[in-house]
Image 1 (tube, rainbow, N blue to C red):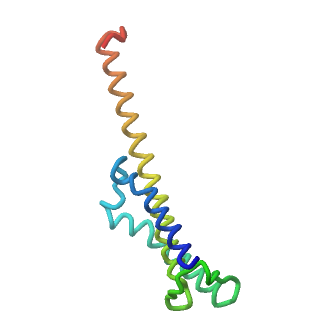
Image 2: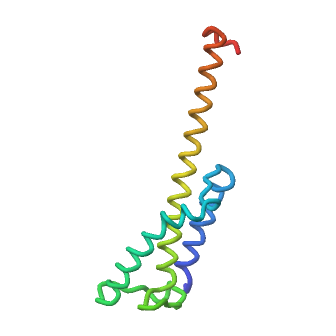
Image 3: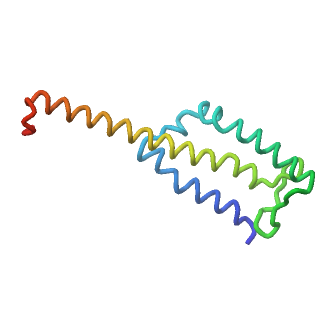
Amino acid sequence: MHGEYLLLLGACVLITLPLEFVLGARVYRRPLAALLAIGPVVLVFGAWDLLGIHRGHWWYEPARISGIELPGSLPLEELAFFVVIPLCGLLTFEAVRTLLARWSALRTARADDRARDGGRGDA
């Protein structure tokens, strides 16, 4: 199916999107930080792919991609992959970090409450 690769990448974005809005990952709200994290991935692995394509080391299944090629015969999907997958990883990392910070603050608050109650635990 043409575009299957793009559909898969779209699903990855949709699955991780709640991490931004529900768990407060704050990746989309800090575009410069996201660019600084994802940009090197795009540059390094984009160049790696272009070299591999040029040397004939690998290719892409025409039946699974859109057919849109960027300069150097790099499929649009491959560039999207280098943006989407690190973005999803960054969203996951930031969501976990946010949750751990919340749990730590909650544990600290509970410990403070117990200390104020003299350790009785009847808060």
